[in-house]
Structure formats: C-alpha cells, structure tokens
Length: 90
Image 1 (cartoon, rainbow, N blue to C red):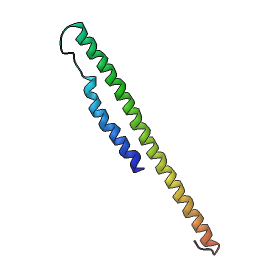
Image 2: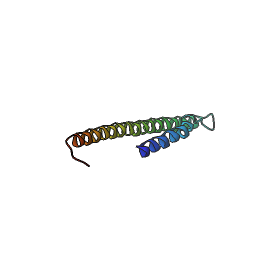
Image 3: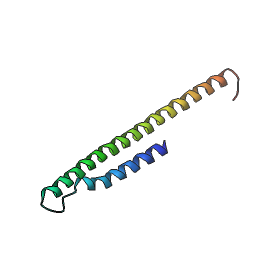
Image 4: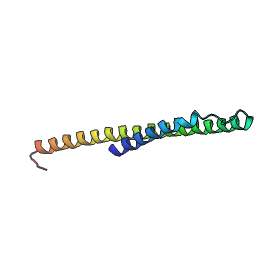
C-alpha cells in the first residue's frame, strides 16, 4: 500500500513540473514561434492529463489494497475466534 502511495506522490510531483510546459511562450512574434509554443503547450497538457490519470490509478490501487487487507484481517480474526470457541488452538 505504501508503495502505491509513494508512486502516486511521484506522479503528483511530476505534474507540478509538467505545468511548466503548459505555460510555454514562443521566443518571437513570428508565426513559427507561436505555433511551436502552441504544440509544446498541447504536449504539456497531454502529459499533465496522463500523469493525473496515473496518480489516480495508484491511489485507487492503494485504497483497494487497504480494503482487501482489512477484509483479510477481519476474516482471520473471525476464523481464529471460531477455532478457539470449538476448543482448538492456532
């Protein structure tokens, strides 16, 4: 679970850095400079979206793992109690 959250945090950090690409401006006033900046901004927006999706996926996996571990622990406790009540031991 910790690893999923750490990976999600890395994707979040990468998003903070990728924002720079979405704010690029052309170095000059001619059409080529503006067009180049626009393509970089589009690429930055696509990267930002992908990184956000990856972060969300990792957080979702961490939540699913936490839920599964909770169910596993409850089931183990229930079975342990049941065995103890019948006079057995673990």
